[in-house]
Length: 361
Image (cartoon, rainbow, N blue to C red):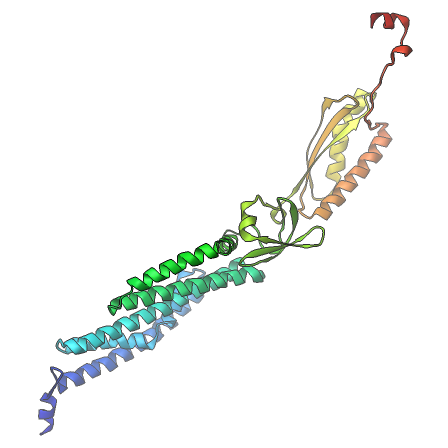
């Protein structure tokens, strides 16, 4: 047998020449795809460094995570075009393509999940270790769900009976969900807290029955250091069901109070009080005067209402400003001869009145 006879010899329905040509196409296609991948990664990477968008960075991540076995699968599919149809060969090739595609999809999916988890943690939960842990836990859950879907899809392609498996998983899932519904409720509440961010670690919050600083946001509970010093552990689901006041995001504090002036105060002195109060408030830094009015008569006083804002959310600074304003009010009212009223009532006893008044009563 000479060399040309050997090239004409047929294996699995194709000549040796066809098999050698297909092998050359396989090798050359793989080399071209590998070089193209590296070139695209370098070019897109340089472009991504010059922009602030997310999608080009994601494209670099996807290109980087394209694995060699997927490139070989594409090369095999290209080379198979030169080989006449063969039932056995086509079945093996199809199975290899499906497995490689499923694995590559899993690698890409893991990369996308990791990319967005890392980006969200870096931008939204910087310094918040508990929230970052929650984001990573959500990412692990998403990866598990992805691989379960891919495995079930692969079993379905290979004609593996999955109805019983799916039924068993469904029944088991329902049983687990019923047994752990409180845990799952707290877990989903943790996801809502991390994504919606009604509060973060370090915020001072108040809810029904207590207030304090958030120390940790876990998968099941949130830990709060109360103003009395003790640590309060609250289930995430219970916390989200209540109304939450987030003092950590307060931009300013409003102060509204009354000054009760004695009834005998001269009207001219009363008319000067709003001007006096405004000057006192505006003298303090980081304050904004709103109003001061003589609003009403009470049984024992002339009532003045004062409203102003402290442009600081720190309660200690607010208290310092309030104290300074109160002291200035005391000094100015003493200098003006304005006296504060105190609750009092004049009672006229029957035996103390004149006879004419007694006869009328």
